[in-house]
Image (cartoon, helix red, strand yellow):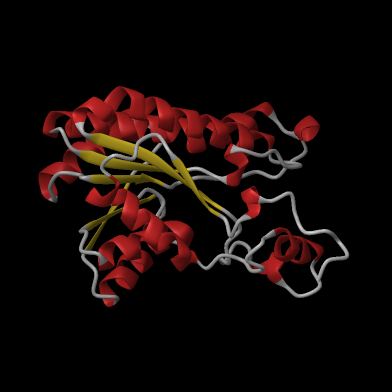
Length: 250
């Protein structure tokens, strides 16, 4: 099950897992986006089922997880991917907006993992992957709520691993760098200062392709990662490995 996988990076990871043989449970909140997404998965030859529920609602999540396991089968792999960001300077950010980001990006993974995890504990088996961020490690102007949530998600990942490893459940995270998606398209125009910044700041010299996440997701969802727990793998083209390229360096 992949939350928020009706588009973007969540869809890319879902496609990778589907191609590796997984039956896909796609979560979302928009009926129209869900319809298009399921059509897309099916046209790619993947077995996908869509479920609309609010990942921040404890009762709704519990009921939906129970329904999924009755109708489709046990959830063996969970990817907590749903998330939002609000780019607002901290002094201008409303408390309600800060709380909304924390609720979706941090509280929701707790809620979904709690209900999926109970069943995994009973079965003594499971893989949980939390989608973290480079903001799990670094701060950045105007994303105080997002960085706070993703930093918290990194530590939640480690704590979940600490509590559940004895039940043969592996809980790890993926921290994507900057990826070429519909959301970043306006930033990737030649001459855009932010595009130049990312290309210069990334040792690989490019934006990530959503398919670059597939391998890491498959690895962490497979038996190949059975003794890896509580780790965050950053798929960022090397950004976190370097202080950056000097301005006058070619």
